[in-house]
Length: 316
Length: 203
Image 1 (cartoon, helix red, strand yellow):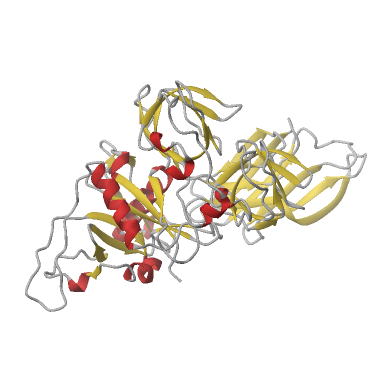
Image 2 (image 1 turned 45 degrees about the horizontal axis):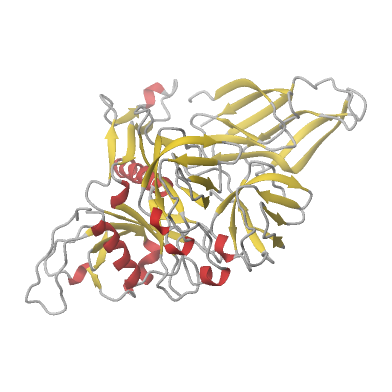
């Protein structure tokens, strides 16, 4: 009988959920994962730190069993189980890209747009797909990256909705477990400036680099259809604003805009870019970023700068 | 195993096209969603866009014949979609089923054609779940001209079928294993010659 694999390793936590990629892992595999918080194993913090946690095949996604230090002392408080914030097996070949839907109550027509959904689990960096955005249907079907979270509100930092006629009065969001598999990826456009070198804002971290080329797909529904079909080389990238500057003179082009919500309901193709080549680095082809991994939730991943040791057993 | 290997190759190509190909949403249908279900207007838009980009058709025409119920087939681009689109596609004006081709030249996975588009459907066609305006599933139909994308076999690494006989398992030789591996890269060779016609299902 083939021997199970045992994989040992460690990482420094940033306090946010993360994946541990495991070769040959797949949905249905016999797998067990254990985490040990090396940094805070003897912590006397109050509340007590989760010092050890584990999960194995057959347990529900997101669940975990763990041992926590007593509040204010480095002794075992309890060995309990929980149903959220734990471990989930993700295989991009088999696991659905989208999580379950959440229904929110509003999106502001502001810059940037802020959505509201009581009890949402989202954190900065999450990507969500928006649908049923009542009153703001021009963004329905698009993906947005969350750049800030405050209570029940989360911000679509790369969407300037101040030109929209009205706020959304409802929305449905589904978090993406993983991005589209091949990179560089097509991305939704949220703005294009009128400039000698157009500056393009994308709704999700675009991942492009200087020297790469992109081709534009922009219909008259988004105003600036003069750029439709043009290919531009990226001459600058700004990661803070998630923009790229391309060598296309859009000075005389129609201003970029979104259709009205009513017009969007009749059907339109959202503005987007697609990869169109690489002028600077020819050893950068389309990359398969698919993976199989154990996803670690916020309940088990430790806090910022914790060193977490892990042991993964993978059978057949 | 051979079927599985080729299907895996198709799935990887599917995923690559989903991630990187430009798209057009169907807007001519009647189901009130965005994208709508496919209509003749959407097919014409795809064909006009590919022709404007000077994309070569993939298949040659099939001349009409003296057979009742059949019709000629134009030079065509190819479209690859999900089998759940059968009902939607067959409702489109001008749809000609493979059984109505004047000669038996339809390919096995082919369902039929509309204008200059020959349509292939499969249960592993691309679907983006819950992604339409109304939260319905969006079906990605990749419409391609000749040589729009390619698969590159890694140099010196042809696919391998690997069989491990039971003698390698243990002292009682109880278990055997079979598998395959291959090394390929994929890329779009002309992004103007491939379009993703995104659509939802007809009511």
